[in-house]
Figure 1 (spheres, rainbow, N blue to C red):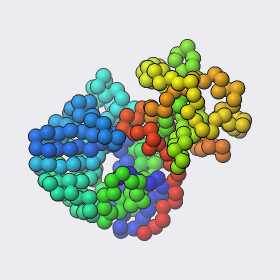
Figure 2 (figure 1 turned 30 degrees about the vertical axis):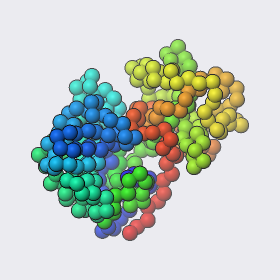
Figure 3 (figure 1 turned 180 degrees about the vertical axis):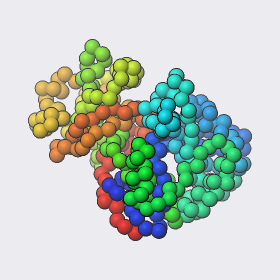
Length: 315
């Protein structure tokens, strides 16, 4: 179950609020002594996050499915998506924040209200070294101010009586990010002596066409650029994967891609998903001041859509 993006948090007694953790969405599946971790695209990531699997083995249940987020904590103890890519080499702490319980000892909880699922979750993970994503106290404005002051990514509001609707982006869960960023699919790059000067990224529309969102030039450390180039270079293809290129002209801010510029680009199969921060969308649908954050191993390319934020209605 996924959240719908909004510009502000909904208010009212029907809503509760949690920190939006900056990590990999994952589910723990415990079946007797066997524990596996699955990413959002159902990839087995157990071997990658053995510490989390070891903690999950101590869940107080014969069988359970726990939904949550794998998070890397940086040197200041704050969640960092970028740190998640370097935790093994830099010795950073990896934790799992559990926020939902979908199955318990042979019984599905998908049709059980969220408050009841949370209560069961707290009992099940107690003493396991998994962390509980606790509901935040206070009003939406107080919570927003506190989470911003801590430098965290955002807040997720959830209806307390909501059921779990797998595979859907539901308005019963609402996410508010305090900085604009989302996932995009890499479809090309501009080559340079360092591998690439910029990435060309995009998203799928309702007709399953890949639409370009422009270029990402900044945010790459030399190490990240080298690793990323190793990932994109083997994906080379002769055909442009974007349905909306070239643009007729560059935008006012220069994010458009002309026919002349396309001749300088190398196209790749749209298989790699990255997280990108940006200041705004331009009128012609390009990203302004886009910066690379990290690779998203947990997001299938075909599920990447342009996130349109809506003003949340009050309950």
